Every structure is written in structure tokens, then in C-alpha cells.
Amino acid sequence: MGLLEDTIAKINPLDKDAMAQAVAHINSLTMPPWALGRILDLAVELAGMTRDITLPVARKEIVLMAGDHGIVAEGVCPQPSAITTQMVYNFTQGGAGINVLATVAGAHVTVVDMGVASDLSELVRAGLILDHKVAYGTKNFAQGAAMSREDAIRALEYGIATALELADSVDVFGTGEMGIGNTSPSSAIVTVLAGETDPAPYVGRGAGLAVERLAHKAAVIRRGIELNRPDKNDGIDVLAKVGGFEIGGIAGLILGAASLHKPVVVDGFISSAGALIAAVLSPTARDYMILAHGSAEPGHMKMAELLGKKPMLDLSMRLGEGTGAALSMNLLDAASAIMNKMATFESAGVETEGLK
Image 1 (cartoon, rainbow, N blue to C red):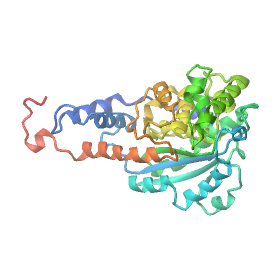
Image 2 (tube, rainbow, N blue to C red):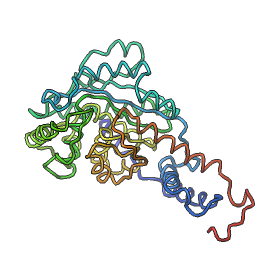
Image 3 (cartoon, rainbow, N blue to C red):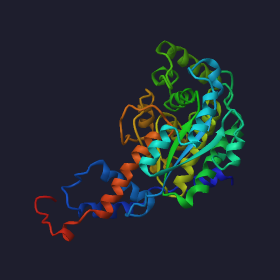
């Protein structure tokens, strides 16, 4: 049995006993019934994930997967692929949005080269990034498969390996990404998994594409779907035909975290494409996903629907990198603090009549 199959076999549903204990504890706290709403829902889910009502979430790790995309050759984004490499260097120097917001959240950022189309060995040697490069960028999926099935499995297993490698020092994972052109494979993935053929409703501006170019972008993605005919019931096939190496890495990271009973805060549009792949491979893995925020990309609402998730935040963000995940991690801290620090009716000597 390979790493992918072995990992999927280890993914178990949420612990119902821990969730029941969390509910009982919440009902004993000094507030009206469920007065903190979704923070309490989150607390119960975290208890089920971690098997622990104290909600261990202090050690936070945002794993930023980076990769390039052959589809850029079709003019679907305004920036060249070289920006991916430049941004990886920016991440390692602490100058990007994710670096700033991870600091606010008390999270560490790990950058992983999944398929950047340049030689990043100096950063690897310096210990600034992890090297899980599958290839120097995907192929153009408007002209054929983005990658081989073997490379898709390799990307997934590299993502799993990353989760396993970091697990001993991590309570909560967050997903992040960098890859010029990666909204196109993400739009393709949600179109295919929604069982549809027209990607237009799920195609957005990405990193600033001119509005008048959106129809062209949608046409290119549709051509790629029609040419490759990915099987929506086979997550590996979808990833191979129209996906990306960093999307595969994110999917693998989620599967690995789920197998370890660790929560995963899923960032926006591209990260949710990885989450969708993970959910096809293991529907139970959805139990460990926390959808960080609602992306401004038009396809994200459909992704949330397919995942059966409601975003924690909605801030009209579309930066990616894991920035939404970083912001949402503060809500996990809040849930943990409520469970551990709020007084009970008994300890505070507060009467419960009229509150229960």
C-alpha cells in the first residue's frame, strides 16, 4: 500500500464523545444558550477533530505550496510566471502579506516548492524552503493533461509527507499557495466536480485580469476540460488533467493532517480547489477542514457548497498565500480560550434560572 492509500485509510470521522463533552461544558458556561454562536460550533468541531475538549490549537503552521502553470501561455493572467519565483523569495524575506498576517496570528509559515518553474536550490540549501518539486511547472492543460497520473500522485504524497514531517510541532495546519495562473486550474476543478461543462460562472479576475479578458479565460478553461475529459469521481484524474502541483500538495496536506486528527484551516479559492480534490479522495477528510473565508473569486461559493462548509469570515479578499487562513486562526484561539478560561455557572456562583 502506498503512502496515499495508507493515509486515506487512517482518516476517521470526528469523535462524537469528545463533541458531546464539549457541548456539555459549553452549556455550563456563564452565558445564555449558545450565545457565542459559530465560535461555539467551531469549539465543538475542534473537540471532535482533536479528541480533546481543551482544544489544543496554540501551535499554528501555514504551509504555503508554490508551483507554476503551463496554462499561463494562453494569456489567462496578466502577470508572467516569473512572479511566482520572485514572490517565493519575498516570502522567505518576510515581506509578503502572509508573513505579516501570520505574525498577527502567531503562526509560522513554511514555504514548499511543489513545482516552481525555476531553480530554487539556493533557498533549499539555506533551509528557507522545503523541496518537493514534482517538475518545473505543469503543462498547458488547454493542449493536453496538466501532468501525468504518476506526477499527480507524487504531488499528493509530497503534501502528505509535509504534514507528517511538521506534525510533531503543529496543532493546527493552514493552507496557502503561490502560483501565477492558478485560478484557471481551480476554476476547472470546481466546474468538473460540480458536474458542469461551462466554467464561465466560476471564472474570476484572479490577480487582476482585465474584465474584457474573462470570456477568453473561460473559453480556454472550457477547451481544456473538453479536451481532457477528467473523471469527476476520480480525484487523481481531475488533478492530473486540469490541476496544479501546489493544488495537489494542498490536497495531500489536508489528507495528512486529517489522518493525524489535526484541524486544517483552508484558505481561499485555490486552497479550496485542493480541498475539493482531498474530499473526492476521502469524503471523511472534510470533517477536518475549516473554511477560512469567502473568496472574492466567483467560483468560491460553489466550492463551499460542494464541501458542505460555511466560511468563517467574508472580507472580500482574494490575495491567497494563506492570508485568510491566518486571520481565521484567531477564531480558533477564541474558541479555545472560551473552553479553557470562561467561568461555569457553578464556579462563578451565578444562578441559571431563565438561562437554560
